[in-house]
Image 1 (cartoon, rainbow, N blue to C red):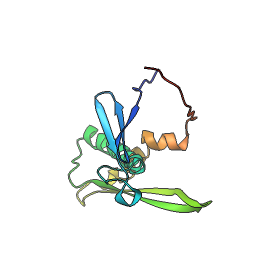
Image 2 (image 1 turned 30 degrees about the horizontal axis):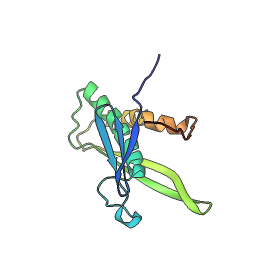
Image 3 (image 1 turned 135 degrees about the horizontal axis):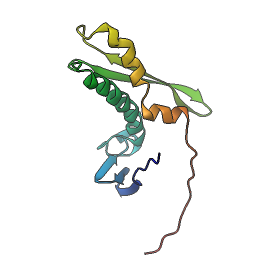
Image 4 (image 1 turned 90 degrees about the vertical axis):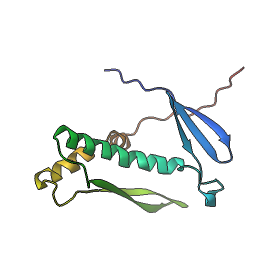
Length: 140
């Protein structure tokens, strides 16, 4: 099965802002004030972390919707632990808690965890792709 996504084009609208354009969408990023940006949009790293949380969320949402389970009162909280590495730090652990109201059927708790773990973004991190970065000279 072929899986095709649109290419992503990156543009620099000014300052520390970097926009990603694909299809009909523009995803805006910026750096925080303390890093020289305007703080007008999430940083690329926060956008990456948000993609993990929202991906887990879409799986939880899909599970609930497919079973007619009320999603009122359900939320996810993602926290991050950084560990020292060389001269800096790296992301060492990501934890996601699925919060459910007392009325949510207990028999679905463990399955919510399993479906959240099916997140496609998480799976890419578990089996990372090969990266190739190069410079190309364009004319015109």
